[in-house]
Each structure stands twice: as C-alpha cells, then as structure tokens.
Image (spheres, rainbow, N blue to C red):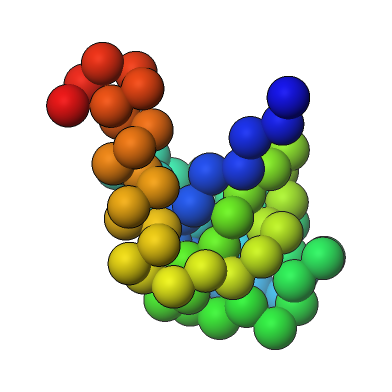
Length: 72
C-alpha cells in the first residue's frame, strides 16, 4: 500500500521545493508538478509532489492521519 501525505510548499527553486508538515521541513521534487507554487498544498509520495490539493482537504487528511497514529 502506498500513502501520499499533504504538505505545504514554503520555498521553491527550479524543480525542488521545501515543504512543511507538522513542523518538519524536507526537500521534495517538483519534477512531476512543475506548476506548483509557494503556498500550495501538495500530496507527497517517495520524495515527489504528485498533486495539488486545497488547504481544507490537506488539513482534514492530516487530522485523520494523526488519529490513526493515536495522537488525537
């Protein structure tokens, strides 16, 4: 099973972006999603941004993931 998690783009340079999720920042590739911009929420899988999602969907998904991990 594969899982993509939503994260917010906080910086972008060429085909790379820095995203933040739950206070953790990491670098991801925008090779598959070059139109993504700073401020967008994107689904991340295996180090690649796969799809742009709206903020409400991203927040809802992250809350559900927290519940699954027992953090709610």
